[in-house]
Image 1 (tube, rainbow over the protein chains, first blue to last red):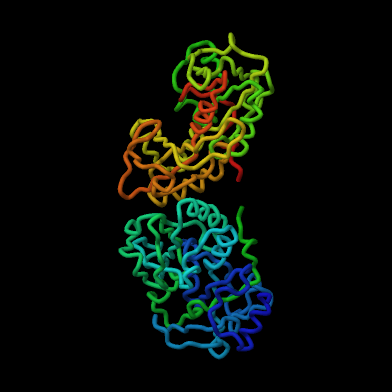
Image 2 (cartoon, rainbow over the protein chains, first blue to last red):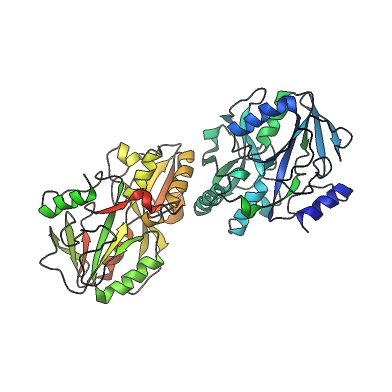
Length: 257
Length: 257
């Protein structure tokens, strides 16, 4: 199935599930939609914090097409499930934005760890949460984001336990992909970045960390989601967690070297 | 002082000390000189084990000039101090090879960690053994080299303790320089590679490892020295440890990306 065919399924209402594992060669994107009045601050926030918020695409105000993500993309209909936030709370879950689309809406598509996990798997680096069929473990850290307007807060990270040689390989591989979070931000003792207990993640599931493994931490796309909620905007829209936008961008094309 | 001027000092007998800290922008090389009868096996050994034995240059049989290392290099006179091995034992220390040079001698110049340490320092990554004015800690591991002819043995590594974020940066930086040992081979628990006690190195000095630091291990040029000794050749020549060949190769030119 091509990404375009996948989006057609979503658009027809035939796919309303998490998108993990589909069209693995292609980048999936986190979605943020904001009124123009807040979009400029959010763009600055992403620019200042490129590791948690790497931008794969930004729409023109009012336009639901973002050609850089895929020629036929319709942001209003091509995501399996949407969250509508009002004043920082999830007010509605929707299957489509067609009825609530505003002429001042600006779309942000943010790179996702599925892309670098695909590259790690291709290179033979084992991923524990996939072996254990769980969601990746995610944690709030004590590392402050660079604030922009109402957007701030702390970095959220995902963690993958690895043996030393695999951790080195993972740094090399993910360094090539800054558009999907890039290199890790930390390796080793979780307390160094304000994480008290690896077995108690703030998001996702705990996974087994073996005695001969190091936890390796990457900046996570939950960071802008948390910043968005804390900003308590009158309206903001995201994908429902796990229900991402499938793009036409091959992961391999995101390599910078 | 240019590398050529430095070599002139050595050639005149005015410099007989360790070369660390001189001409920092330029690569220094480990020296191995062997009769042609063993040189082919040694070349295969280096080819099979490029992380401990990255070749910066190989001479033609009998020639003491290696133009790729520097136009005026004379391998017989430009190293501050030589070890002559006979049957695997240091039989003599010499200031010059002029009296013992053989028509079948083949020169190998092997990249050295001074080059990547220069790059790490330029990038602001602290190096503990330099802060503490000690030699880097080196250890025998349980990782077997790929054998070739009489050359085999286990990998020897150097260790530099670092905080997580610096370890990530160090992987990125040293990955760019495969000609000077390249990326680390291990991060974290030393027992994973057969090292029982970080404070008891097999070569060099112990250094402080702080609780919030990870030991980061690189393949080390002592590996081919050990393999050479164990091969018990009738004759083999190396530099005296620390007394390296200064080349005209800028470290920055060794970057592969």
